[in-house]
Length: 322
Image (cartoon, rainbow, N blue to C red; front, side, top):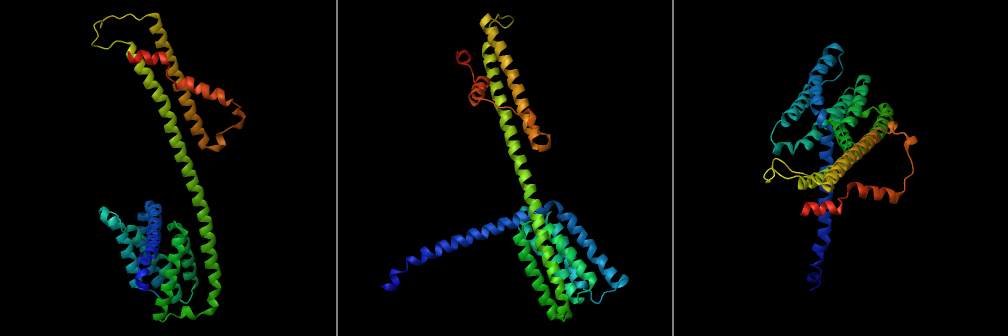
């Protein structure tokens, strides 16, 4: 009985845990997708550079400036992974769903894993220490999300250490080379901070541009709506083609006055819309905005002016409804 009494409590406890885990998983998947979308314009260029660089530097470090250790297998695998990154982008949408995850695996293998492993296997040679530093900068530039970049770097470096241990690399036992670790850490931390700051500034400018675009569209819609209403009133005053007096029609003084008012209002509306659009476009470039042109305005007067500008007069509405 005691056990049965607590049976309904289990789903109540497990459901929030499952929902929280699912929400966190979806959030991580979205972060991975954003990381891929940020790097998408440069993926093809980066992939081709890696495809060409792997065999080229194999020749350089084997024959031109021989190094203690080289790996044809890792370089071949890296080139194949980068070729796959280019090929998969040309496939169907179903295949493209997996591209963000494949992108992370390919970048993790070809940058932090490969260069860290080669540095350890070459006993912290100066060439490979500098190469690993270069890979850190590339890694920071290619991975948009700092959290994903740090996790990927830790997993890749630990995997490189484990593989170097099983391959008998002596670099993992060289304690004097640990002095490089603060430099690597400094590069990752401050490189990420500077990149994060620049990225935030870029996103804020992009958000401002989007808001200005929405404002411009809104301000264009208002005068167009007013002009549309005015033209409808003009169409109600002027006879159509099927009217009996097709060849001649005389307008009275009141109708001519209304037409002139509509034309004047339409011209004012267009001028006000152009001034608003010019102001919005100028405001995007803050250096072009001169505060000397600013002036104080009465809120009531501004509202009344807006109503007079965009409102449809009752008499015109009555004319239109007849």
